[in-house]
Length: 66
Image (cartoon, rainbow, N blue to C red; front, side, top):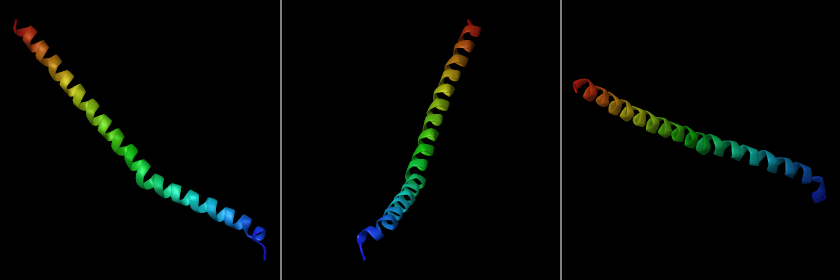
C-alpha cells in the first residue's frame, strides 16, 4: 500500500481537526475576550457620561444660585 492512497484522507482529517480546534479556540478565548472588552468599554463610557452629567448638573445649580 502506498502513501498516496491515504493522502486525501489524511488531508481531510488534518483540515477537519484544524477547523475543530479553531472553533474551540474561538469559543473559549476569542468570544469571551470580545464580550469582556465590550463590557469594559461600555462601563467606561457610562462612568464618563455619569461624571459629565454630574458636572453639568453642578454647573446648573451654581448658576441658579447666583
